[in-house]
Length: 200
Image (cartoon, rainbow, N blue to C red):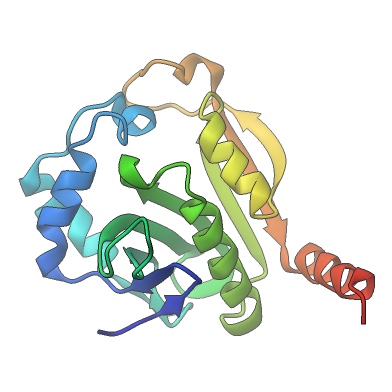
């Protein structure tokens, strides 16, 4: 298996065409899709024709993909290889690694266990140390408190609330969207301060 990144409890790997069934199951959960489209399942044909090509796209500026399948390592809570969902670490401009968007979509069974924060922190670290990333940004609905907590735990800070011209209105969208971000400079400064504070 081609592994992009390992964390304490997860492996992040590239997607393959064989992941369609996993993606259909993930997007078929109304709770998972609540803040995406109001809870409607994504049809298999849409995943195969529209979503999978995006997940398989290699970004020349970053030198790698922008989406990663997350699988569990063997733990007491998960079987090795269990599909947890996916993480996004996608450059906003295809030919530049400067600004990337962080995202995550995990199975409901994996919620509340710290996987999203663990994966987000690992991707941010790799982005700033290996991939030439200068700024990480993330967005979610204002009312999506759980996702906002993950962003904050991963080190991102609130930037703004905004109202997009979305094609459909879902419950909570009247409160708008929020943007969070983290710059490489801020990340490095915090990292240096943490090292100074650690006992020798």
